[in-house]
Image (cartoon, rainbow, N blue to C red; front, side, top):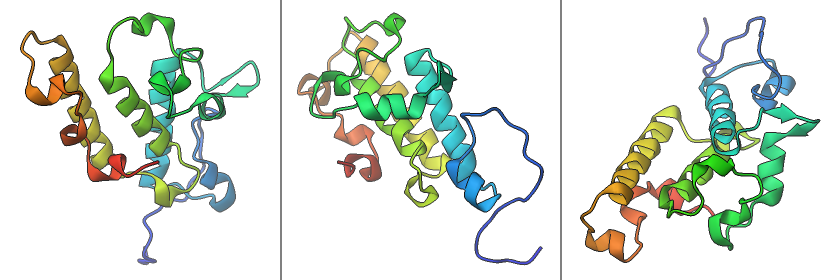
Length: 157
Protein backbone atom coordinates (compact mmCIF):
# COMPACT_ATOMS: atom_id res chain seq x y z
CA UNK A 1 0.00 0.00 0.00
CA UNK A 2 1.52 3.31 -1.04
CA UNK A 3 1.78 6.05 1.56
CA UNK A 4 -0.28 8.94 0.25
CA UNK A 5 -0.06 10.89 3.50
CA UNK A 6 -3.61 9.96 4.50
CA UNK A 7 -4.60 6.77 6.24
CA UNK A 8 -7.73 5.27 4.72
CA UNK A 9 -9.31 1.98 3.84
CA UNK A 10 -11.34 1.36 0.70
CA UNK A 11 -13.82 -1.49 1.00
CA UNK A 12 -17.49 -2.30 0.62
CA UNK A 13 -19.13 -0.49 3.49
CA UNK A 14 -22.09 -1.94 5.28
CA UNK A 15 -23.47 0.28 7.94
CA UNK A 16 -26.56 1.82 9.37
CA UNK A 17 -27.72 5.12 7.95
CA UNK A 18 -27.08 7.95 10.33
CA UNK A 19 -23.75 6.67 11.58
CA UNK A 20 -21.70 7.03 8.39
CA UNK A 21 -19.23 9.87 8.04
CA UNK A 22 -20.69 12.45 5.62
CA UNK A 23 -17.29 12.70 3.89
CA UNK A 24 -17.53 9.00 3.04
CA UNK A 25 -20.29 9.78 0.54
CA UNK A 26 -17.91 12.13 -1.31
CA UNK A 27 -14.62 10.22 -1.06
CA UNK A 28 -15.73 6.59 -0.64
CA UNK A 29 -12.96 6.35 1.97
CA UNK A 30 -13.14 5.64 5.67
CA UNK A 31 -10.53 6.94 8.09
CA UNK A 32 -9.94 7.04 11.83
CA UNK A 33 -12.00 10.22 11.84
CA UNK A 34 -14.91 8.29 10.29
CA UNK A 35 -15.01 6.20 13.45
CA UNK A 36 -14.92 9.38 15.53
CA UNK A 37 -17.98 10.64 13.63
CA UNK A 38 -19.89 7.41 14.29
CA UNK A 39 -18.93 7.53 17.96
CA UNK A 40 -20.21 11.10 18.16
CA UNK A 41 -23.57 9.93 16.83
CA UNK A 42 -23.66 7.25 19.55
CA UNK A 43 -22.89 9.94 22.15
CA UNK A 44 -25.85 11.99 20.88
CA UNK A 45 -28.04 8.89 21.11
CA UNK A 46 -27.03 8.52 24.76
CA UNK A 47 -28.07 12.02 25.74
CA UNK A 48 -31.22 12.27 23.60
CA UNK A 49 -32.52 8.67 23.73
CA UNK A 50 -33.22 9.02 20.01
CA UNK A 51 -32.10 6.95 17.04
CA UNK A 52 -29.73 8.60 14.56
CA UNK A 53 -32.60 9.04 12.11
CA UNK A 54 -36.03 9.19 13.70
CA UNK A 55 -39.27 10.34 12.08
CA UNK A 56 -37.26 11.67 9.15
CA UNK A 57 -35.07 13.84 11.37
CA UNK A 58 -31.33 13.40 11.74
CA UNK A 59 -30.18 13.55 15.37
CA UNK A 60 -27.08 15.61 14.55
CA UNK A 61 -29.18 18.32 12.87
CA UNK A 62 -31.80 18.29 15.63
CA UNK A 63 -29.16 18.96 18.28
CA UNK A 64 -27.33 21.53 16.13
CA UNK A 65 -30.53 23.49 15.52
CA UNK A 66 -31.62 23.46 19.17
CA UNK A 67 -28.19 24.22 20.61
CA UNK A 68 -27.45 27.67 22.04
CA UNK A 69 -24.28 27.80 24.14
CA UNK A 70 -25.33 31.07 25.78
CA UNK A 71 -28.24 29.37 27.56
CA UNK A 72 -28.42 26.88 30.41
CA UNK A 73 -27.69 23.32 29.27
CA UNK A 74 -27.14 24.86 25.82
CA UNK A 75 -30.92 25.17 25.44
CA UNK A 76 -31.15 21.41 24.89
CA UNK A 77 -33.80 20.55 27.52
CA UNK A 78 -36.35 19.71 24.82
CA UNK A 79 -34.10 17.21 23.05
CA UNK A 80 -32.37 15.63 26.06
CA UNK A 81 -33.44 12.27 27.45
CA UNK A 82 -35.79 13.09 30.38
CA UNK A 83 -34.20 10.30 32.42
CA UNK A 84 -30.87 12.14 32.57
CA UNK A 85 -32.05 13.95 35.69
CA UNK A 86 -32.12 17.56 34.64
CA UNK A 87 -33.11 18.64 38.14
CA UNK A 88 -29.61 17.86 39.36
CA UNK A 89 -26.41 19.72 38.63
CA UNK A 90 -24.71 18.14 35.62
CA UNK A 91 -21.59 20.16 34.85
CA UNK A 92 -20.16 17.32 32.79
CA UNK A 93 -23.18 17.27 30.48
CA UNK A 94 -22.20 20.42 28.59
CA UNK A 95 -18.67 19.08 28.19
CA UNK A 96 -20.13 15.81 26.88
CA UNK A 97 -22.30 17.73 24.40
CA UNK A 98 -19.29 19.78 23.26
CA UNK A 99 -17.34 16.58 22.72
CA UNK A 100 -20.18 14.88 20.84
CA UNK A 101 -20.64 17.89 18.59
CA UNK A 102 -16.92 18.11 17.85
CA UNK A 103 -17.00 14.42 16.88
CA UNK A 104 -19.81 14.99 14.37
CA UNK A 105 -18.23 17.97 12.62
CA UNK A 106 -18.85 17.76 8.86
CA UNK A 107 -15.15 18.08 8.07
CA UNK A 108 -12.81 15.35 9.32
CA UNK A 109 -10.13 17.98 9.90
CA UNK A 110 -12.26 19.61 12.60
CA UNK A 111 -12.91 16.36 14.50
CA UNK A 112 -10.73 15.27 17.42
CA UNK A 113 -8.67 12.09 17.29
CA UNK A 114 -10.09 9.16 19.24
CA UNK A 115 -7.28 9.49 21.81
CA UNK A 116 -8.45 13.04 22.55
CA UNK A 117 -12.04 11.80 22.86
CA UNK A 118 -10.95 9.23 25.43
CA UNK A 119 -9.10 11.88 27.47
CA UNK A 120 -12.13 14.16 27.58
CA UNK A 121 -14.41 11.28 28.62
CA UNK A 122 -11.95 10.39 31.38
CA UNK A 123 -12.08 14.02 32.53
CA UNK A 124 -15.88 13.95 32.47
CA UNK A 125 -15.88 10.88 34.71
CA UNK A 126 -13.57 12.73 37.11
CA UNK A 127 -16.01 15.63 37.13
CA UNK A 128 -18.91 13.22 37.72
CA UNK A 129 -17.01 11.85 40.71
CA UNK A 130 -16.70 15.42 42.00
CA UNK A 131 -20.44 15.92 41.51
CA UNK A 132 -21.13 12.83 43.61
CA UNK A 133 -18.48 13.32 46.28
CA UNK A 134 -19.19 14.90 49.64
CA UNK A 135 -15.94 16.87 49.59
CA UNK A 136 -15.89 20.13 47.68
CA UNK A 137 -12.65 21.20 46.07
CA UNK A 138 -11.98 24.89 45.56
CA UNK A 139 -12.23 24.57 41.78
CA UNK A 140 -15.52 22.73 42.10
CA UNK A 141 -16.97 25.31 44.48
CA UNK A 142 -16.14 28.21 42.17
CA UNK A 143 -17.57 26.30 39.20
CA UNK A 144 -14.29 26.06 37.30
CA UNK A 145 -13.94 23.03 35.07
CA UNK A 146 -11.15 24.41 32.88
CA UNK A 147 -8.55 22.05 34.33
CA UNK A 148 -10.67 19.09 33.23
CA UNK A 149 -10.84 20.12 29.57
CA UNK A 150 -8.11 19.99 26.96
CA UNK A 151 -7.35 23.37 25.40
CA UNK A 152 -8.93 22.20 22.13
CA UNK A 153 -12.34 21.95 23.78
CA UNK A 154 -12.04 25.27 25.67
CA UNK A 155 -11.20 27.18 22.50
CA UNK A 156 -14.44 26.27 20.72
CA UNK A 157 -17.00 29.13 20.48
